[in-house]
Image 1: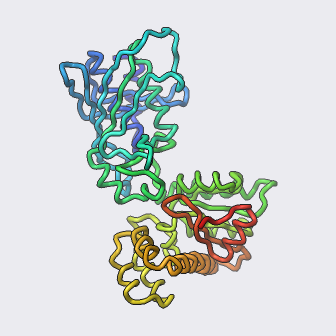
Image 2: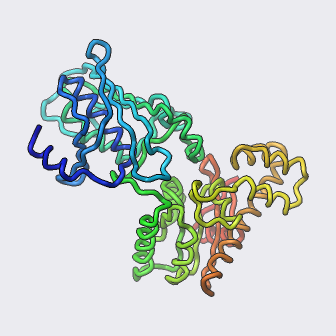
Image 3: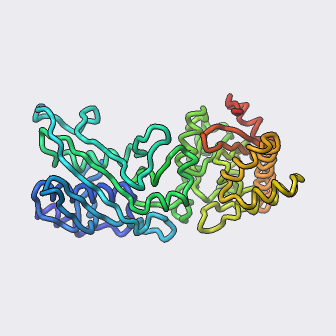
Length: 394
């Protein structure tokens, strides 16, 4: 065992690690077994940062098919009690496939097809393409930690399996973003953070302060809850310098933004998540508060919908399912209800900040659906998206 390995083992991280790190560790352990190397129950995983690495525990490794394949198993530990992947088992099957001879000098290069990634059972794929849903960080982590071990004339076939992935994905909004069949292999950092944690709120408030202190700040801000909303907002033309990812701490961020002098704030998000705001829930993590179906049914009652439709909404398993049922039977009523919900989000948000101070900040809301189409907005949100040159879609 190298001196570096021993040295780094004294600095094992106490914080939890994101899913891509555990996948990379299991895959590396499996590849080393395939190459005839001894098994270590902790794998040294290098990060893209220079000279930075982590020791990551691996549960086991097994050689299969007469030594032609290997499986590495790890268990995700995000270090966060509220994270649904905590304790999740990860399987990585590796196999070296022969390919034509190439130069020994080939370095890590995404243009060289030396790595074949296969999304196995429980791993999220893009709907309609069956391509693995993987972040740039996760792919880079695999490349950095596997490329140097792969024999020169081989392609590494890596199949990733999350045995409980399909089950756990049902508790996420994956399908709202076109990801099906399991959990996406996403993440942008090695250390896990949860959008519900106080540390996350402090980071968001620091970022907000930087935005608002900039001399070029226009007084307009668009807030999104997560990475998918952030990506969609950028694609729709929201300027990056006025786009803030809040995590689940929406209420405190609204108040902080008003205190910092923001004049126009647009809440941009998935309708199945933001419906909570219409019920006065401003910390949106599902472990802390839900009630979305009850809120939707109550708003339907307030709008005077027929009792048969209200009952259909109440029996739905999700906001998305309720919308599909309502839209199929009465599309105009569905459309009207969602515009009313967006308007209610605006008024409830305005009332929320007024508990803490009298600020002139105007709050708008715009919703996107499962197909990532911007569909509905409140009256203030309509004016704000129009000012950004963004049109709603039918």
